[in-house]
Length: 120
View 1: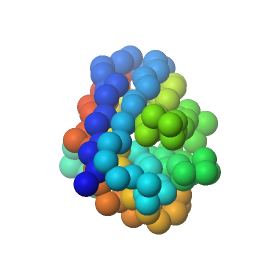
View 2 (view 1 turned 60 degrees about the vertical axis):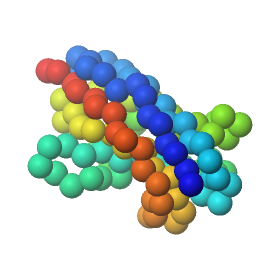
View 3 (view 1 turned 45 degrees about the vertical axis):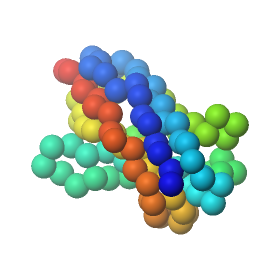
View 4 (view 1 turned 60 degrees about the horizontal axis):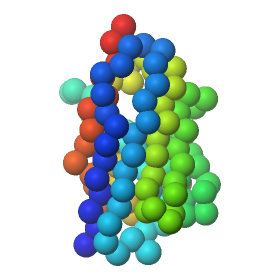
């Protein structure tokens, strides 16, 4: 069993920055892809960014150039650095771990979610 614990969500003004963290515990050696998703009220959960165990990344077009995903394998932690935040980035952000590819992650485990609110 794998547990994912997220932190870092907050209220921030437009143009500001936040860093989300997700620490995994349990048997994660077979999970090659970690990813961040987000879900705004009334909308589907969408992929924001993904990273493989070797460090290859993929980003949604809406966040390219503003968000950076990274991972520390020694700490079993994945990060999402979010810069130049916009009100439309407001959502609950979920960490996920699983298999698949950086373009098509297949999550097996989800975190509980952390709220990011960007005020205009």
